Length: 351
Ligand code: 5AD
Image 1 (cartoon, rainbow, N blue to C red):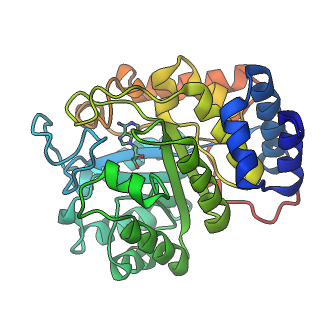
Image 2 (cartoon, rainbow, N blue to C red):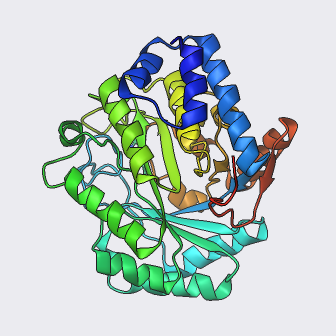
Image 3 (cartoon, helix red, strand yellow):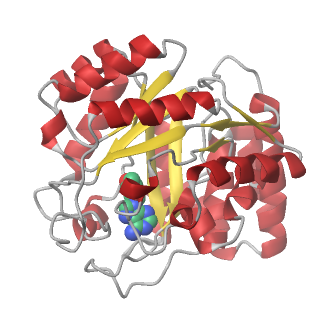
């Protein structure tokens, strides 16, 4: 089969033998990639129409007990000015987000145990009581099942935890030995058991990634079937061991996003900030390739400038209010519409 036939077969069957993913990933031409993107966008339109869900992201702590080799917030990076937002500051960010129409708040942070003993539970409770019409998404890393349950009971709806890679030997090259793929997977399973809408995902072009590891990731995402999948290019950070590694390929990221959409027509697929960092209006290209979520940053600028996962984050260049208006203008001038509903996963829609 040629690549176009493989793409059509994937659209039809939502899966391919691994050899066919390999062929596509390694031989797809620019023209075929556009064809793939068109198919992926058609499928997205059928499930979600032209609506793009907006989520307000609040980066509430940049303390992290982990030492991931790729991430600028790793504990060994002592040039970071560390901060923690108080409950009051987080609520103020929610208030501002709500006023501009956000109905999902994403609380994202490093792995910071300070919030584990009731503090985050209390914050979730308070946000939910002020804004019962909003969804709360957590993105705070690996915790015990009991703690995940406590946060769910307090009102959290969704949880983002990228698996980073489903290949153990690759995982070990990205993290120190105290962080294991087994525990990552345990967390993802616990989150799903509890009833969260769960997000997994990878960086494209992370060091030591190969076509084979990507195929394993596609298969994992197909089997585990997360409600959300976060994918963006790897971007080196100057204060990490991977500072001299090359940036991930923008086009390969688009290809993978479109494949994910065909594998998983209903998935909530964000056009990530990293896409805009490596290419101007990269998030729009990601939407044209099948993405249906954008996560504008509503962290106050004072804290935001200290939340750098990688070099030169796109959003550090704009203030939040310009950010959201720019995003809305860009979307509407391209035939899409930024919507501020809760934007839950739509599994009931036939495709
Ligand atoms: N480049 C791109 N993405 C990164 N992340 C962390 N560091 C980097 C980087 N240098 C991603 C990881 C993590 C998410 C919060 O951000 O995939 O799960």
